[in-house]
Length: 122
Image 1: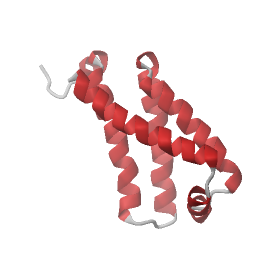
Image 2 (image 1 turned 120 degrees about the horizontal axis):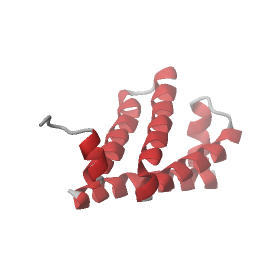
Image 3 (image 1 turned 30 degrees about the vertical axis):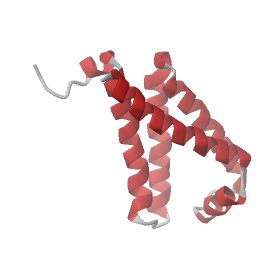
Image 4 (image 1 turned 45 degrees about the horizontal axis):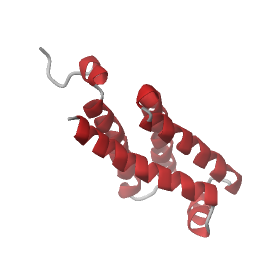
């Protein structure tokens, strides 16, 4: 279970690290869509920093739950943004899937979380 959990967490973490790096670098492929979603260009680096710190907290075992909570908030903001602009369904479903990866990976790799949130009642 731990290996599967770290695999899911690693997949999500790699995506978030890549996304945060792109936000910090601010290439035109990031700036254009961000502006189309209604976010000012000045917010891109700040979003990248928040995503990077949240991801690092998530990948560090001692702070993984805090990181998962912060990433959930970040992904909720992505869902809200895409719903607000009337984006396609995939743009709403994609962050929800990554939220499931975040929590599923953490649940599989952390015994304490499995005890707190058991899938089967005993």
